[in-house]
Image 1 (tube, chains in turn red, green):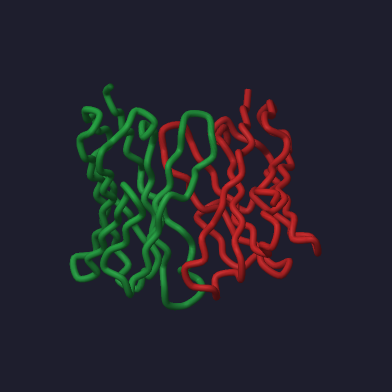
Image 2: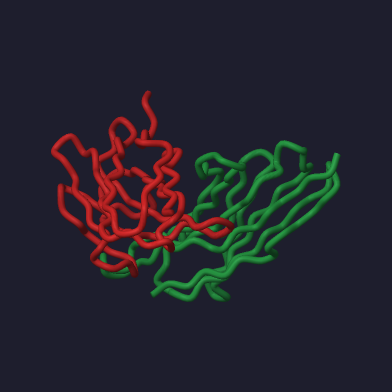
Length: 116
Length: 115
C-alpha cells in the first residue's frame, strides 16, 4: 500500500524564480492538503484540493497556487520566490475533503526548499 | 480563525517516567484533534486522534484527553522509552462551515527521554 510520495526531496532556487512541487496521495485517498513547515515550527496550512478544485486556503499570498489532477495527484507552485519561502513543504492526503469529519491526514516526507 | 497553543516547548524525562503535553484551542466548533510525532528529518506521523464526542482515548502507552468546556486537550505517554524522543505536534480541525475545516497545528514540544 503506497503512502504519500513527494518529489523532489530537495530543491535549491534563487530569489525571483518559480518552483513546482509534486505530490501523489496515499492509495485510496482523494484529497490533498499542502503545508509549509519552517524550521522549529509546526506545519502551516496553505490550501486543500478536492475534486480538482481548491476548497480552502490558509493565510498565504496568491504567489502560492496549486492544481489537482484527475488521478488525485497534486502540484504546488510558488512564483517570485522570496528568502522567507525557505521551508519544508509537506503534502498530506485524506479521504472525502473537508466534508468528512475527522478523516486522518497522512503526510509525505516533504520537499526541502532552500532559497539563496 | 483557529488558534492552537502548545506547552511545554521542551520536555525532558527519565526513561520509564510519564510525559504530558497540553494544548488549548480557540474555536469552540473544532471537532477533531490529532497528535503527530515528528522525528528529525522525517515526516509527521499520526500517533493518536480524538473526536469531539469522546472524552478520552487510549492506545497502549499513549492516551489523549479532551475537555470541550475548557477547550483543551492533552497527550499522555506512560513508561517512556528513548525511542519516544521526538517533536510532538497537536492540531485542531475547525467545525462549522467548510471554510474553517483546515488543521491548525501547535508549535510543537520537543520530548527528550533520558536513558
